[in-house]
Structures are given as structure tokens and as C-alpha cells.
Amino acid sequence: MQPISAIGKKFGLSRSTLLYYDRLKLVSPTYRTAAGYRLYSADDEARLRQICRYRETGLSLAAIKKLLDDDHPTRTRVSSALHQRLTELNHEIAALRRQQQVILKLLPQKGQDRLARAMTKEKWVALLRALGLSDAEMMQWHAAFERQSPLAHQDFLESLDIPASEIRQIRAHSVKLAAERAE
Image (tube, rainbow, N blue to C red; front, top):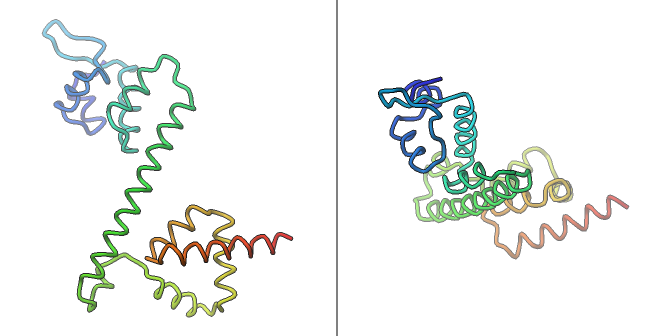
């Protein structure tokens, strides 16, 4: 049995967070002393470990409670919740990239490259050219990227602030090249 201070320290959670989790019925101490002190069992600790792990993914407390309170949690339910969260994260990342590109366009050009962690199409092409790649070899690179990870390829092209119409062309050409190589 562990008192609230020990379990909180173990998981890096404050006493008030643990009390809040108790009010939400996320994790409640199994035992209380005669003086009313909360004592957490090994099962409570295991549940708290799951809560903390799911919180790291960004799942809401309500979603976590639903998963943990399910009498027969299936991998499908957990997987579905995590896939939904991953989709949300992908949308958030795309929105942040768009904001980053707008900021970069509004800032004076001088010195912004050092501040931003953004790669532009021009910088990327210059880098590939510095490595000695021809246009045909760059397209082969795109074809390999598209074949191995189409969604990541899409995300990468979007991160370069390439217009949607050009992204569609690059990806279509990449798919065609990949198909030709497979023949």
C-alpha cells in the first residue's frame, strides 16, 4: 500500500491531480486508514500507470475513463481510440505547419531561416541537387517515398508549402513511376 504522496511522486502527479482523478472515478484508492488517509494498492498503481500512458497520447480523461471502465476492453476499442487521436494529431500538425508558413511569409526574409525549422521546396531541391541528384533521380526518390509511405509523403509535401495541385501531380507521377518499376 502506498499513500497518496508516494504514488503521486512515483508518477509525477500532484496530490490535487490524484484527488481530481478520484472525483472523476478514474482511479480511487482501494483503502483508507482510520484517519481517512488514502492508500493505493498494486491494482490502483497499475490503473494509474495506464491512465498516465494514455494521457501521454493526449487522450481526454473522459476517453480514458471509458476505456478503463469497459468490462471487456478489446484491442479494437483501444486501437480505435488511438487511431482517432492520431488522426486528430495529424490535423493539428497540418494546421501548425500552415501557421508556420504564414508566419514565415510575414517575417522579414533576413535571418528567418535560422529561426524556423521549416523546409521549403526550394531548400529541399537545392539540398538534393547538392547531393548530385538529377530531376529523374528526385522523381525516383518521390516514387520510393510514395510506395513506402503514401500518407507520410503527402504530409512531407504539404510541409514544404507546395500547392495542393502540384502535390497531386507529384504523387500521381510517383505512383506511375512506382508501377512502372514493379513491372
